[in-house]
Image 1 (cartoon, rainbow, N blue to C red):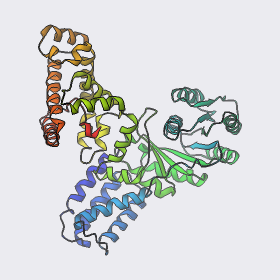
Image 2 (image 1 turned 180 degrees about the horizontal axis):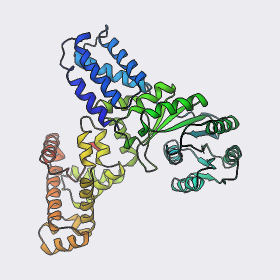
Image 3 (image 1 turned 90 degrees about the vertical axis):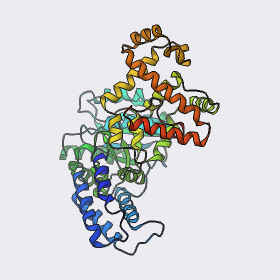
Length: 466
């Protein structure tokens, strides 16, 4: 998400960063480029106009920060205004009510409501330690109820059964009663969507809202529909007392305009981003972190939080001890790093959150050929015996072993030779990491390998970033 906007804004802001003084004249061209970049990213016109006006007023006003150059000050103003337009700060769900807290999901058909119910259930159970019950009041879409039942099993949420013959209000009330009996903390009600906004849809969901009085009414919207997202958000906001927005499919939207427009149009906070198809692919929305990513400054805080949740801590401690002793980096270690990267959403997803490392680099790493290469290397390692994985020299020096491993993995000998070379390079680097000087040399070595077109070292991120 935001790749196009990041590239355009970065180019626009380069021209201003070296200025000794900010004036109406020397920021005019940059503001024009910023305006074009936002419009091309599908940001709504009223939002763009207000954003540019606020940046201009602040940039040529009296704001002075002695620790920043005028050019840096301008970039800081742009960042502050991006944060402001998206909501200033993260706003979490309001669950401080007598249980069960009822959450109603609203949105058009195809926006991803049902999947978002499952993602939100998993999020609340894992991070908020809540007991969650889900129910489907979508009595129109074929198999909608079965879909939610399947997803509920996948995320270990309780499921309240319903049928297409029931009234949506009866389903919702029954789910809340069941939640009370089962001592659930949260009830999430999935609702019917339509292909477009219509009176029938709005009338039904208004009736449902009035009957159950939810503590949270979340509007689920597909980020990829661009300008239409604004119109749809406006219609739902007029019909329902929304408390927040969930932007879905943000991993497929390179423009990101919806994230910058929805808050302005509805006045309601974006609370979550759907960042993939898997049930764990839901992130709380932090305007400051998103603004940082838009400006190419990365989002290290989110990366650290993700690592805290997803990395196998026992393996990490074991690996750290191994490095401290100056031991090498074997194929078992290499395979572990592959698996850790998968858990973190792939190398491209990780690079997107690192300052200056997103954009073209992350896209390159996520292309089909690169991902096939990663899968090929993992298959080669899996084809080795446990002893070969722990003692890389056994593979490097024996031709018969190489042939057997290649047959098992379905690859050519040159693929295995490439892996052997990369393992040796990583092993040398790891042995040097006992000192700070060694760490600096290792980072330079990694830069050389990346710049030399040899692809990313299969060991993944340096341990300090894992």
